[in-house]
Image (cartoon, rainbow over all chains, first blue to last red; front, side, top):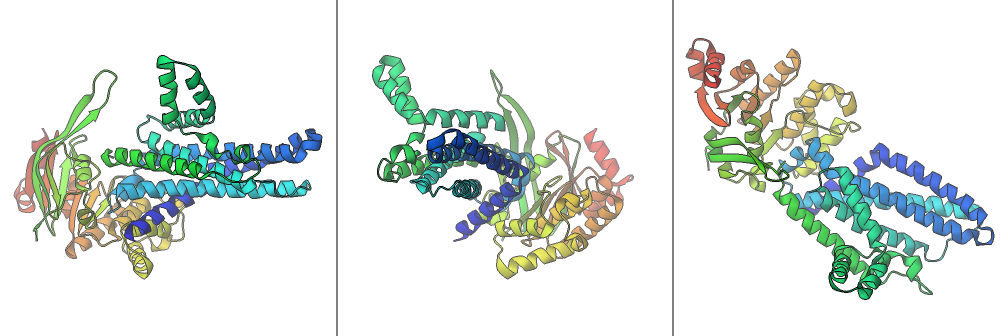
Length: 253
Length: 245
């Protein structure tokens, strides 16, 4: 119970600091502008306006939330160490694992809020253009959120050993991009042999398969994300958390 | 029950800085042994780089000793049982500029295990004790250095710790703020709390401390009791200068 209370205290503090950060406002303004700009793309698509407006908006929302999530995850722990705020936390009876879990939860809550606000704006825009809620919309947002969970926890882990927030953002961005080419990587691994095949197969284990979370690509007739995708997300979040915990428990401040 | 609040036994701390070809090592404190008696005010003096902040961090579990043993009320500093009894004020504490003192203190109070009415009372008391009441409605961004230092002290006092570890508590403060903080620390010590403070200001340490540890290049050069420096010609300053030269 005490552990849960402490985790919640750190998470709420982290969430409120992130939301109050000027970058949150900047990203929100950018997201609104970008989503609104998708109206233009929709109009140009003529009879496919609803589909283009939906797909374009969802993609912009995911990219904006991703950029903020990576920025936030890459800077939150180094900033606390740099400002010595972490001294005031770790000189108290707060287990390092609890602090890490709280910070991660706070970052994910912020991402969820950002995604929810952008989703509401997007749906409002669709309504203004005379369209209803697109099929699989909720699952598409859930898929984006699962991707954010995976990449945020990975960025937390990287931030504990990388030399700067920028390098954490670059590494996380590369992993996010590579994660969308899992099926292509598998195809190349099957087609090649020797060291090249072994390297590609290793990359498939070391990089999360983010294509699993593209609900609108996968759905077909049924709107859902398959249970293995949830398991994969849980494994990546859990694995990244444990690796980050191992690093932070040895870290001196 | 231990009568020593703190004990260092043969402690060494070496920092390792990884390099391209090989790591560089820097020993900050070496073969360090001392005790801080419960209820005492102990000062820590030394030039820059003498190892004062390293000692403070070892004491609060922020650093781990390379060799030797540190104990706080009989526990390792990383244990919750030790941390629950320690209040730490780092040098130049930072608080998010957009929060008010009550918000910042509530957060740190929760991390110290306080909640509900107990938390509200502890926050109110800490604000009153540190003289922050007239500024309670301001945001941290409006605070002067002295007010920030008071807020730093307030967060260290929240959970009524038995040991206060203060790194440069009067650094950069104006004379009135120094006077107030000195009075506050004397009051806390009169309540039975142990105070361990580092400072560059010999006169401040002289006014507050019962005993002073003088660090020179990572080693304990001298331990001086109040009676000794009061009897010495030139006081604590003369003893310090002699030790560090």
